[in-house]
Image (cartoon, rainbow, N blue to C red; front, top):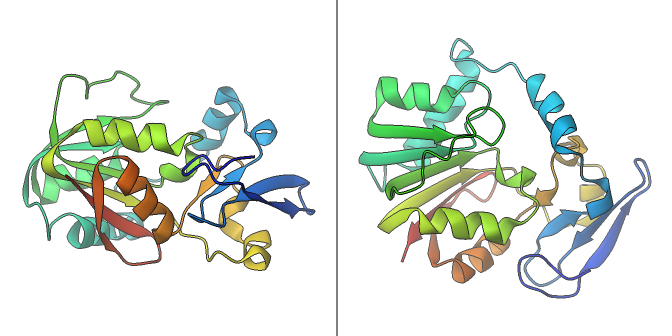
Amino acid sequence: MDCKVCGSTTIRVYDKQFDINYFRCPDCEFISMDQSRIVSFHEERKIYDMHNNTIENQGYVDMFKEFIDTCVLPYKKQGKLLDFGSGPEPVLVQVIDRDYKFETMHYDLHYSPTRVYEGHLFDVIVSTEVVEHINEPLEFFQLLSSLLRKDGILSIMTLFHLNDDEHFSGWWYRRDKTHVSFYTPKTLIRIANLCGLDLIYTDKKRMATFSKR
């Protein structure tokens, strides 16, 4: 199949343990799961309902604070912020409301499905542990880019793959059935170029920040 990001011909990576095909792009390094193995909306919701992350979980809160301190504050310290994909309990928004100086809104396809972002432009959009669930990444990033003011920032968190087929075959991160898309910093650069963004920061492990052109 062709790459969903750049359109190049992909290389099949077969997972014999779970009998799943993945497709790796040798150009932009994007990896996508075989469409036939993507779970239904209902099954996806059942998996999400098993997550139990709350603001009382200090380790979870510390992860978000590191994300904000690293990916947001060096570029924006206040303004209108959207958490896109906030989860069953919007912990990130709770942390931001408590500890930072942003005006917040949040949206989640399963748990807060009202499209509160429509008609608004944002200074900051954050999306943590979301893009790996997105089947059509270009559509997703184009939407978020359209919601940013000029010079606004988009900060994401996901785990980057190592662009190594053997490592990928044993990688724990892809074993979540709802993880269907996998990225590297090179993928994000290509996405940025296609969506009116510039990649301005990445830790090359799991965090990245874009700026709207």
